[in-house]
Image (cartoon, rainbow, N blue to C red):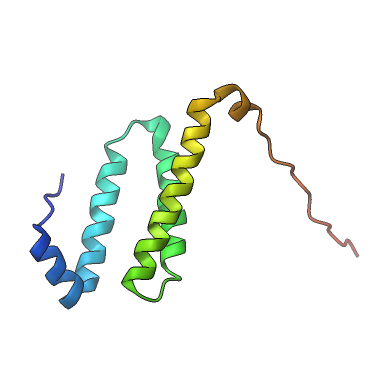
Length: 104
């Protein structure tokens, strides 16, 4: 597993070489996901993709931080619901609405 630099080095990277910091973040995330069992890997990859899509729309570091916290808070709420009332969580189903296709 990749060893993270100390806080001062991370701060320096954020201020002077943000591309390197992004690569380090992706590497550490990939390693963490790969170290998980197969059953959780797909969910973690989905969460990572969703987070990356949300962060791509951010305009500054504070916006990124708030967005990341909001996404993770939402995930924790779902996890809390699943743990608090698993029966109700399993019964939750989405309504699938088909697209209207015009055949000509």
